[in-house]
Image 1: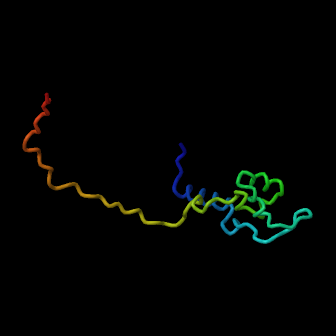
Image 2: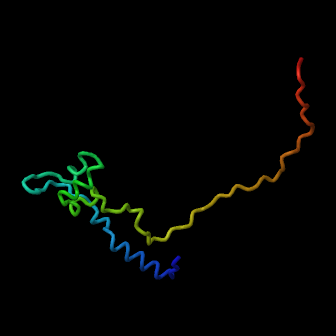
Image 3: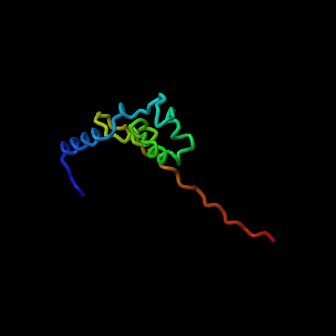
Length: 115
């Protein structure tokens, strides 16, 4: 395993975040534009036949730059490293019981067979 100093780790995280597509760039076009002789909203067209066809359609029409969300080029916001400081979650621990459960006072009689 590789151990990095915190400052190196932060620098690495910042570099990776800057190399990923930013959220400002991660938006599909919403207008119609022409490819070849057809005018369409190509981002909507890419998903029209279902998710299984999206990658093929994005590649075929070369619409990745215009439809980065549809074509799966944008990472979910939670995938980006967070640089904001947050408070540690609070943990509520239930205290142990202070009174022990009493022991049984008498044994239960064993069942008897009926004839």
